[in-house]
Length: 277
Image (cartoon, rainbow, N blue to C red; front, top):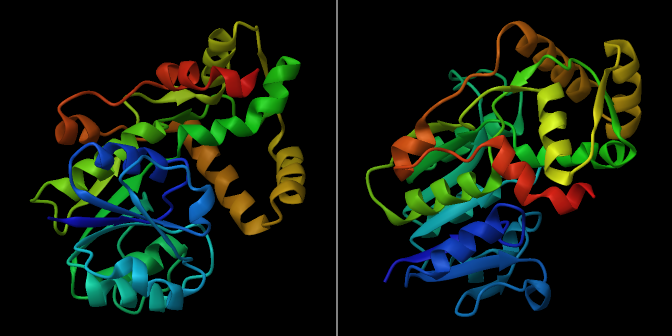
């Protein structure tokens, strides 16, 4: 029987992957920092481990064939990929929409660096290059409760993806063959402006919510203070500015893999309406 290890198993996406796999009859193992608080489905083996401490991964990787890897934004440690490659036959990595690095090229994100390590590891791999998550709009929750969202670039069009679609694609790739070497760019089914997203969330919660365009310089100051990373803030602002004139791309990868369209942003807002109330 195939044994699959899911890292990030108690997170937003990992929890859905574990639930999907638990109903397949496969041997599912979940990595958790605190197994006693994991609250995962019955029949799932929960093993203590932490990606920040690669030496703790050995028990979780024992007799594993496939691994779902989610990197939580911590410093890249090559020992993690090395440990996985010593045990598993296939790694499915949740990446983002990045370009491949040429030999010797400097990585501009940890996703690129981990992809490079995985490609060099010698085991089969699949990259799920997900466009920005719909869950990131939860950052507007406080403003939505006040009825006004002040944010830059209201006409930036985004193709945000529902976390359950990411999980469904990951579960499919982990349980079927033919995905080795694939780089799947997965998005929502349509590109919707920031302002329209706020309107859709307002409809889901039954409250009128207005959009007010925040000047980019004001946004830069506020977001740098909140996020603490000026480089990341500048990159986000530049991306949003570009999506005003050129909407974020939409792919049909979810439908091609799963045989059904990706969930809409409206369905995501309805699923998360209580989070905005």
